[in-house]
Length: 127
Image (cartoon, rainbow, N blue to C red; front, side, top):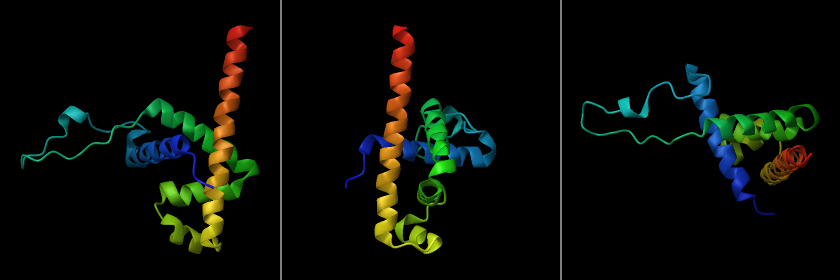
């Protein structure tokens, strides 16, 4: 099964958010984009992180932890630890095909989580 592209993009944004968080930015950028010029004349390419979107994705990923810890661990290995498929397979003692399957399952679970959240929001607006 193919990955769900919009979920995959959210997970990439989430990984950047977690990286900023680990550097002491509490999920937010530690330096203004306007201050990132270097003295050599070259500017480092800055990938903007949508913090609100990433925080919401973090909630979704954390919701996997209690009932589907294997999916949570796979996402952390792939996106946070940047182990790749082979590294994650070695770390979790699973086949590479299983890691791919876990990513597909995580996409479906996260898609459902976001769908349920949107449906609940719609119900509250109509009530």
